[in-house]
Image 1: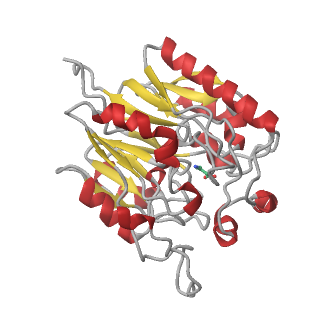
Image 2 (image 1 turned 30 degrees about the vertical axis):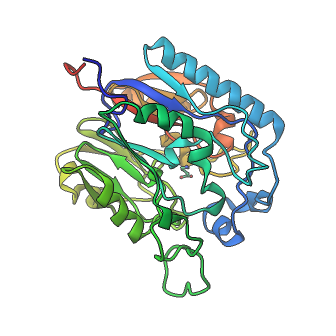
Length: 345
Ligand code: DAV
C-alpha cells in the first residue's frame, strides 16, 4: 500500500515526496527594526523596509534554480509538489514562498504549521501552501495541524528586554519549524529570536504520542533556524557547526550519545556575489539529504562537497546561489513530506 501523503520523521531516510518553494515576487521581509538588527547580516540591514522586492535578476535566477532543483529530484523518482505561483508578496506585506521549511514540518503522519513570530510571515503558509495543505489533509491517514488562533497575537515584542537573550518575549507561542531537526522519535530544537518557550510547549502538545522535543544549547547570538548548525547525514552520522554548538552538548542528548559527530573542519565565508542578504556562510550546511547517501549541494560549495565525499556521501550539485541570496539553501527551500525506510513501501 502507498504510504500516507505525509510520512517522515527523520532527515535522511529515502525521500519519496517533497515540497519545493517558489521565489517569485520575493521581498525583503518588512519586519520591525529590532528583529532585523537581531538576526540579519549588518551590511544588508538597511534594505529591510516595506515594499522592497529583492532585485529582479536575483529573483528570476532563484526561480530558475528552484525549477532545476525540482527537475533533478523528479528525475530521481521523487514526487515534487510546488507552492502556489504568482503571489504578490509586496501587496501581502510579506516575504516569500521560497522557504517552506521555516513554516512546515512533517513529524510521522502529521504536518505541523509554525506559529511564526514575525508578523510579516503570519499568513505565509496559508497564502503559499494553503491549497496544498487541503490536498494533503484529504488523506484520512494524515493530520495537518494549522497554527492556533492565539498564536496570531501581536504581543511578542516589548521594550523590557533587559534580561532576555532573544528579542521575543514569551507572551504567546512562537516557533519557526526550521528551529527543529527530526531524528526519529526525538526532535532536537533550539530557542532563538523566533522560538520561545511557549512555542516549544505548543509543539510538544501537537506531536503524536511517542515523539519528544529536546532543546539543545546553542551559542549563536543571531540564532534563527538550526539548519545551518546541525546536519544529520544518515543514521549515526551528524555534522555540526563548531562555532555554534559543542560536541559535548550534542552528545549529552541520548539520541546522539553513540553517533559519529563531526565538527565542520573549515570556516565558510558568506557569498556576496550575489549578496547573502539574509544568511551567513554557514548556509553551506543547509544541504538536502536524499537517502542517507546522496546529498544535494550548491555547485560552487566545493570545499563542502569534498568534505561530504570524504564522509562517504555522494554529492549531487545544483546551482542555488540566488536562492541562497534571498535567505536559504536546499533544506530551507523544501519540506520533505514522505521518507520511507528500506522495506517500507
Ligand atoms: O546564517 O545560519 C541559516 C538558515 C536560514 N533560514 C544562517 C542562516
